[in-house]
Length: 325
Image (cartoon, rainbow, N blue to C red; front, side, top):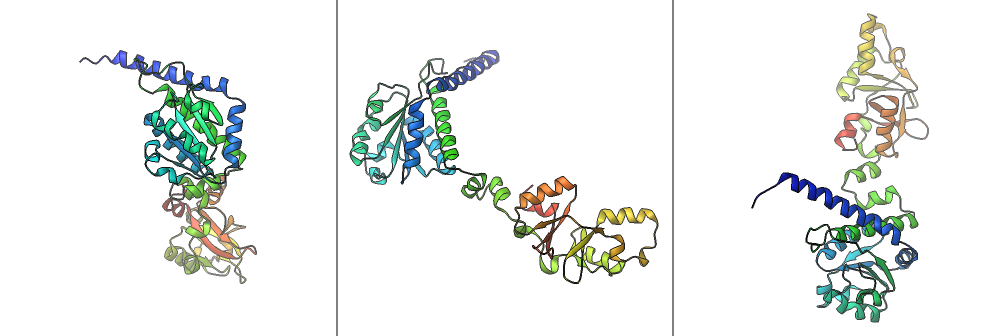
């Protein structure tokens, strides 16, 4: 056996060309049937049950997962297992999405009468619109391809790519029809980076209580430095008698102040603070805090309530530790 790098590259290019053409070919055949399939899935009070054998089954598992994560309750049921008890997982309130390139998979065709008897709608995704599966379906989605990318035209390649793309098209159409938002997606992915960005609040990661560096306006410079050193935020808020955040002093301000040569011992917090500091509500999304820091080119934000009273503080390191940025 000899390896020809140029032959490998040529086959790779051919594969991508064939599969791209297969996906684009679907576009020409989408029509009322696709819209009816989406309408049926929207009306289902149960779940979309995805079924498929072999490679179509692997595709089906991915489609079921995509549907479930984008607002359409779905699950995968293996056709062979369905014939041995798993049909009990399917209810009349469900919809079955059966995937088969040939439309003649024995295990799948065998359970079609059971699905029909149950009364669950049947949507077929198949490459042969005259197949046994297609004839029994309420709606047929044509996933046919001109040829497989496999040089032998045998291994499911372009056909499974087409099935995946058609499944994604269904999921996107459904999430749009449901008014599915990024926040909804995050609730389905609480452990992922997107979940952290869209679900985590400022209050979840900010310093609060005694951990918030804060001094009154008449605090002397030594008090201000002591508060900044002990709390380790890289800044200190300046709050009035009512607890409202009226200013902020940061490590950067200290470096710039030292360059002036002023007598620091004579200074009060009110003399060196930045008035009207950038603030954020404690119930705001942590991602909003990251955006505000970037927009204003600061590394510290003060969290305040509706009356402007200081409730917390956070810096960019807090956001990084929480993996928001």
